[in-house]
Length: 166
Image (cartoon, rainbow, N blue to C red; front, side, top):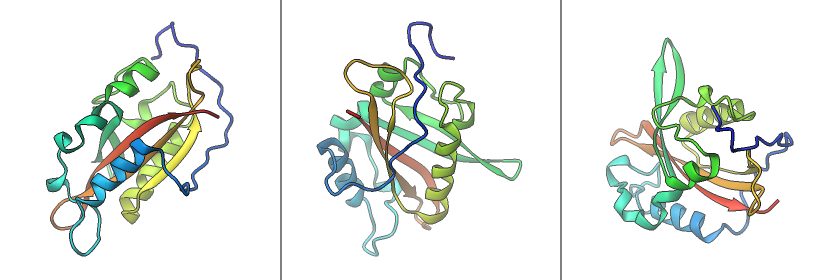
């Protein structure tokens, strides 16, 4: 539930998912760090190599999501949510599932994107409208990348958020 203090936006359905030629510095740092967590064969970054302290300056902008099999269906549970997300959206979804985000009219698209990352092992970028009206920005960017166990199975998703002007 969104606190009364936030006015929920009615975002346009348009979401830009084309990877930009130049990433914002914060997102570039995130990608560079995770690229350094890849094994020599270039496959998905390894969870064992990922350490929040290795990207301590990004912690407020990070989000970690666990894929959870429930009744033959994959749901995605927030494991860690940085303070940028909390301050921006006014709530802490840690421990809840993506499909429980009633304040986000594009939660269904988030579910699809996470399922695709899980099946392909490929990172994902998007620029989308914020679900809350803000004076300082109207869109946000996010990169979501897979983290794999030593056998190469995707076991967690790591994302980094940043504000953007629309």
